[in-house]
Image (cartoon, rainbow, N blue to C red):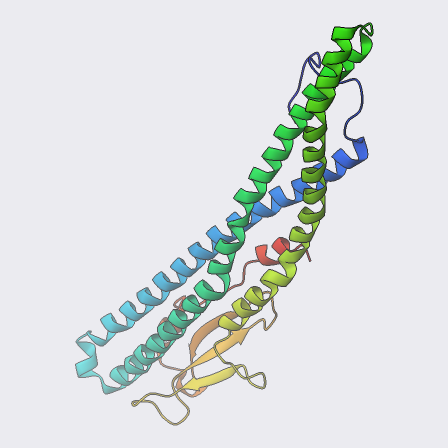
Length: 280
């Protein structure tokens, strides 16, 4: 709210009840905060998907470089292990691509659409504020003539001022009423609007691990029936999913396997800002 030093041109009469003005400021403040959170979430989701793609591409590059190592031609066991590792990396990259595409369609695009509403809302609030200033100016003008001696010219000017005030007053009251009704509805709609998006976000980060087992082997042409590399899901909560690639227990004992399993291959996490965004 602007600070007016000596209230020049301000009416003595209270135009908008203080309770109504407080309600308006509270509801609009909530929407301003929601706008900031929407922009931050949209920016964070874009950073997250870009980082996921860069990470999976780097993992594929590592596995490709290992396959090109001359040691693969000399050591069949090493070739078997690296081939399985490369197969796993490509599967993970494919899953990551699908995940990012789904997040783009079900989360980022709805965020953009939701954000597009705020410029219209802010413009409506500015029009309401401008109408309020006109309302105050004309009300002050009416009060000035009401305080003067009731002569013919003064009464004529008073009548004219009241005629100017009437449509502005009605316009402000209509704008104020509409915003007070629509702002809480729009704020409450964020839950129904984004709940499917965030549910889709969680599903997109599930690589299909069975709830009965935390380990699902990835077979390859050079691995045994149990596979060499597998998925492991840690946490299992809606707030965080961590997926890593690790060697099958039967393959342990190979020092190179231990080295490769230590690589930070694949990690996904849902942003806690989603919960904060919904206010739940």
